Length: 176
Image (cartoon, rainbow, N blue to C red; front, side):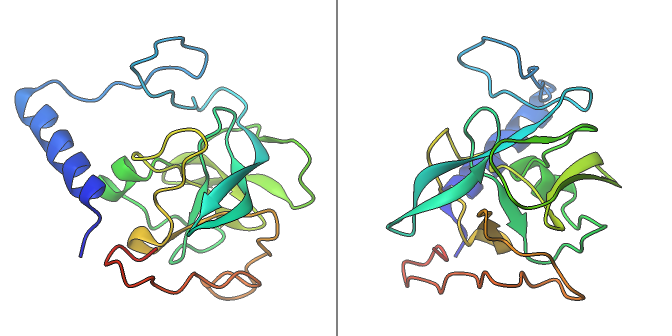
């Protein structure tokens, strides 16, 4: 079963495209409260840690400079994103030519791929989720995406994250 927010977001995006309204991104420095900030290809993305409830347990997770949780896609490789089309609309890639880290021990890098310079942490390309708000994790386990943590170890020859197994489905039908 698909997550209700994903279905609603998909319908909303389709309706906006049909009307011709399109989707506009607001720069990370914008103060428009009703618009969701997007990280520009020309700005530095900062990745830091924060505390958030993940599957009912308080965890230290990676977040962007706006406090939005960061996720990785289980099917990506260290050099190639498989997130395209509508999936990339719901799971926007974190992009920056000059990513910065605050209090992280892992390796943060910019990987040139279909999205431009996508930010990776320990070889895992990073994304946000269109249904999240700062401090809120709602995409855990949805569509093969999992919240990124400081302990996320590098990918070594596989698309599965080493040292961080995906959470088992809870039985609620949403995969988290």
